[in-house]
Length: 531
Image 1 (cartoon, rainbow, N blue to C red):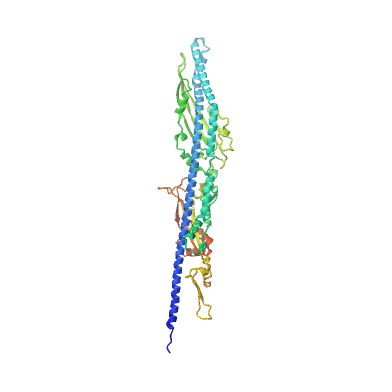
Image 2: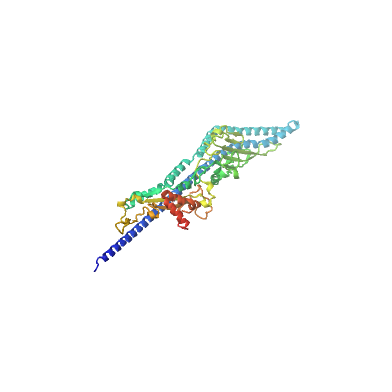
């Protein structure tokens, strides 16, 4: 007996296998494409996070430069206050310099006046003493006439210095950091990229894409008050941890008038106008500087610089020759005296502000020359953001340079079964009517019960970026800082530091899909180095 239909059975089975192969090929291809899209989105988010952080750090650094500029300008104002005070000191120095010839003529008068035979010496010595006394009185009267204009200008200059000191940029820096928090820590940039991807994707299931906020980014960025946290950016440094800012400001003063003064010739020219034309004003020397010393220390050297207060000081000598002597007395006798001036300004709670010069002082110094409130007591340095100084020695943590993770998730459960891609098949093989069959699930939602039934519906991609400090040229040894705007961004391995290698990748993947963290750990145990 001939049996027909055998070929049809074989053909049917072959066609079924062919359909399965095609659908599996399509499914795997689409999943590979979707994985590439997911990873590209994660890379874009991580790089965007790093760029946003670099731009924020550069903005903070530029504002710190502006802050130091105002502090340097303050030393310029203090220099002018001190130097103009030195003019008044020079007037009194000149009056004191006349004490030298006065003493010489007084000695002649003491020896000659009791002796009738030395009457000529007595007369010329007495006359010289009278001339010197009159000149000294004229000089001091000249100083007294300056007082009203001087007080008005002195008060205005002191207020100008105080305004420079209180021009803190802390609020503006905090605004920049708040925006950075929204963009990076709260995954604002990643979410924005996901939203754009939803708009531009032909995928019908727009809600399946989402951005996860890994806690790593917060830890890497937030240095907290006084650099007490683990992050790179501190909201404010403690008073004793600002010396590199002060050193940078000291090094930025630059102009010789602020750092070395040496403008005695100008003082001499001014003093010459009120000087007796018959006498000789030989020289007025001047040295001075303005700086940020420790409290009460009138010096600008070494470890005494800490910005507790700001000083301006000037010192030098006034040399002259009294030429109005009459024979038989000496006709010319030289004289020299010192001259000093300084201004000391401290914070509002310190009432020890000073403004003094040879022959006088400012009775309103504690009012006119005080600075603003003490924001980092003790000291006058305004509030600012800074790089976490505790991290610059931690090589295993990239010297504190912050990395960021971007985690993007695609939730396949957002695809309803009836609307899912047609090649993601779910059916059973049944070889007899009484058999329950073997389930075939190509949707990528859950593993079969025989394989644990794990929920694998959340496809996850992770990418890492880093914000690093690098000045152009051979400056790799320069530590990261918020003094210069040389922050840059790039993508890196997720294992860029010890924390990434040991804990951060798993914790970030766990936040997106617990099984993803387990898969990562399993791969790592097997020596997979693709991170």
